[in-house]
Amino acid sequence: MKANLGTLPEEVRNFVKALVENAKQVEDWAKPDMSEGRCFADTIAYVSRRDDGSVEVSDNYERFFDTIYIYQDGEWKTRRLYSEQEPKNYTYEQCMADASIMFTG
Image (spheres, rainbow, N blue to C red):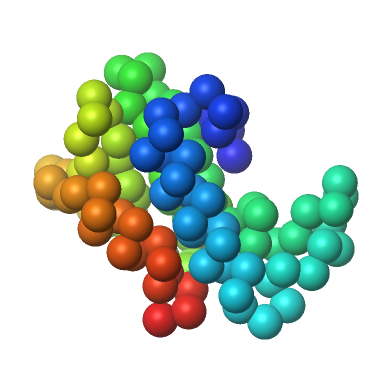
């Protein structure tokens, strides 16, 4: 993760935490077999803060989900990876619903 989660808005922290918790439900993704006792699920989300102040959350490996979640000024949007289309409005509730099933269906 590029951004320090502790410095990000609460909604972003909650969303990333929910993504990781869902990833830990996948068999073998919760085994602490990485440095510092981390597991694969802990590395699943890539979080970056942009120069315009927005925060983007995406798949760290570009193979599990193709949505980029964008948080700025209390609002959420999504766009598809490598898409040239404008981001679409989204809600925090939709983000949390996605996070709760992202890896487990």
